[in-house]
Amino acid sequence: MARKVRRVPKGYHTATPHLVVKGAAKAIQFYRKAFGAKELARLPGPDGQTIMHAELQIGDSRIFLNDEFPEWGAMSPASLGGSPVTIHLYVENADTLFKRAVKAGAKATMPIQNMFWGDRYGKVTDPFGHQWSIASHFEDVTLKEMKARTAKAFAGG
Image (tube, rainbow, N blue to C red; front, side, top):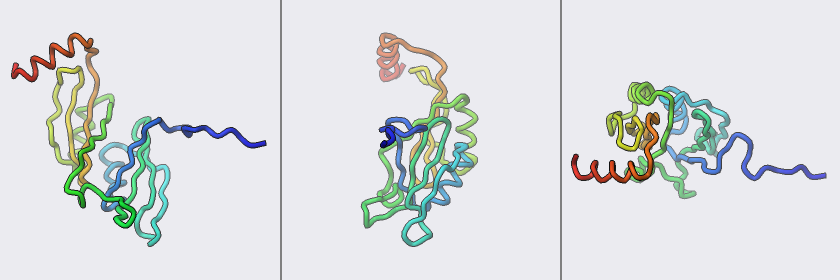
């Protein structure tokens, strides 16, 4: 009798970021140091040097990553001149993780600060060109409050 297979495997969520990096092995080391990532799997590329697929766990979420393979359309932010994507991390202490990421080699692109939507929030860009936002939620804001705060924030007040 065939076993029932989970459509979303155990330990995964519906959406899983998949990063392409130039230098995947170094990126894994960086993500360990900066974000406390745990490496769950690593499969070598056809040349035995590159990484065709790796899986990392950051908090309760998984991330896939691999080296560039231009022949398969897998290009990194380094080759594309940047990335329009930001990976968002909710953590217990945004200040601590933000400082840790910068110390590990990320570039602070938005200082950590209390934001009108109720998060302590900041952004970094990792050495491989991927953008990360780091936040700790400190206040629940109703939709009505959010609309008023948004209007005030964009009115310059």
